[in-house]
Length: 456
Image (cartoon, rainbow, N blue to C red; front, top):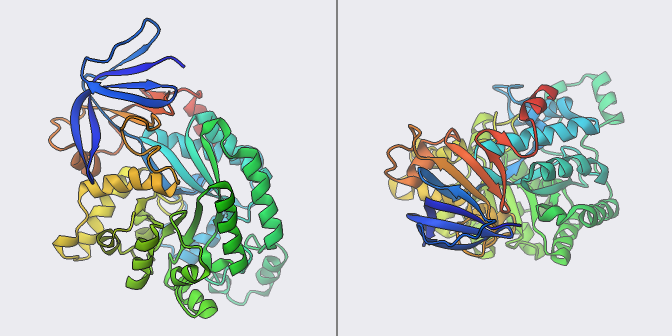
């Protein structure tokens, strides 16, 4: 690869727990930030690529730590639905999709993220018990886009006790019989799931340096202890993370009490599997003891404030978590429960919801904390802490260039605050992932985004 220099930009650099800006040259070699030098000082060779950094804010790419690409087609498909209704409707929308639709779903999901400054994602996929052949079109789509993607293989071996279908269809015998014949939430045996995980890891993990594979229990309460331990063991064996939904709804906490006699975080600690490898979407219904365990083990809750609000499941106790030292990451969730994959919206809500709820001012998350959730803590969720999520020498070059002449960034008074409260992606001009320009001035390196929209 040729060397790339972003010349004389305004760089958003890490400083302690926050950020600072500095005029700089950023040197990229072999997909890595090789150096950050004073503006105008980096030496260029005859074959090097120079990107003009004047009037550009250069920041680390955002990390969407919880998404569902299959629900991309379902944006606008349901409002004023509770969790149970929406999840069953989602199954009706996406069950038994052919391979070409899986590919386009993932492309569409990635296109939206890249255009709004997201360079990495954890996609909890699919919505049914995973099979290797279901992974192929989605891994291929993200690789074609050049997006850094972790595919969490959605698995379970226990019934979905938190999604009782009789709440939706009542005692309709015909529907209940049909569901018994062809239930998309059918459990699978643990040995079958383990073999599928190993096969998929061997096939896709590390592909092009961009695709990672994690075992990903659908929800920890939808899995037996055997499956949870198996997921942990596979992650330890291959040095992977584990991704899951966790106590998103009140009933999920009640299910854990039914099976385990205690909340699921405490039960995972008893099993000896709670660790930094686990990222946990939603984590709404957790108590102080569980927060303490999350802090001790440095497990990563993934806050999804828009989705939580839209389907009225509650909100994660983020102020308490941050105060306890829990590394909270940020996700958009699926477009069926959110409406978009824009992480700027999620950052804004992450800082505003506690204020709306009347949390004491001392506990309000501030803009730098939200930006950390969407960058450095997202890297922890992907088990890539120190590799991505910050502009620093030695990290992978996952970088976004913002236009400083747009109304939301001009004048630039405080970069973190304006990215969190003002920006929505309209200032994104260039996106670099692993040192490669994948998006520039509305054009995607992979090809015609409008064609994908027409296919969708």
